[in-house]
Length: 299
Image 1 (tube, rainbow, N blue to C red):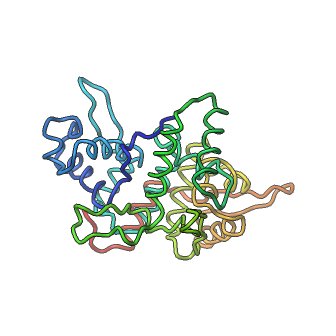
Image 2 (cartoon, helix red, strand yellow):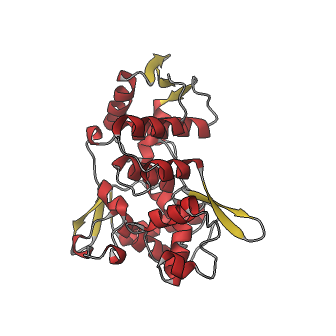
């Protein structure tokens, strides 16, 4: 578990693009630790540290320890770099959310909220008390101040502050994941929030297929074994958890994937399961999406 490594900054519009460009295009693998980092990235020292963290937390890069720490693009990061390095497609933002919220090691608070936390409405006190219980229940210990910083950063990641936009992109503090409208403030005076429900038809179905294939692989399933619908609804890192789906929304999602032939649902001995019916891996889903939907990609 790790907390408050973001230096109090949520990642902002344009940040991840900067990291991808420096590592993927310019090949500066040690950009975040170089003496020229501030000049190279056009960011303050703490923002550089923050971006170094967010590149890993969102699954775009990994750090390799050689003579000094350097970063390299992951398979997911390479695909984002090749096809949507400017984060223009909603698909990309949803998959950034997916990789962030399944990262129990680097983004423990984000993981906990979407995979463990049971409240649909909450405020800061509920959030921090429940997070602290989870940490202690797993044998960990963390200062409440760190949890407070994570709460503030988490809210800034997902909850839109319409007054924060500026005319200068370099000064923009908006996090791109706010566009997903996953969490909203319902009481400005008491500062209460709730998880919102999205129309499934408004989300690219490839988001769910990618996440389902990745989940199956992480669970050790080959692509033709059964996965229980209950696991997809309740298990950590499942599409039901990470996208905050109700059971009806999950079934609707699976029906969409079944209609296109990617999966089929079965009932055996009273158990509801799905069987993956495609030879594609998760990365193939991204490639196919951009080839089919985008004439001008960022290759």
